[in-house]
Image 1 (cartoon, one colour):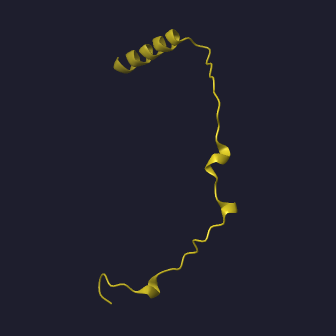
Image 2: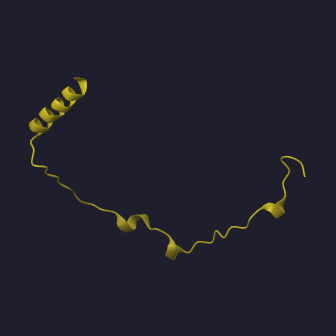
Image 3: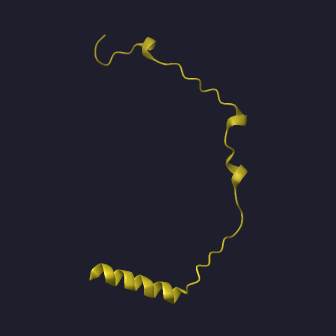
Length: 59
């Protein structure tokens, strides 16, 4: 058998028969709602801290 030739005996048979019971249903875990996150710091405090971090990296 030369390079690139095809031999069906070398091919593996794969069972691709999936049951619907085993399948993931994408709509099953959907979430319609909101989330709120409070870290206790104001936007100004966070921006000031970011500036401090950037200044530390530059210096």
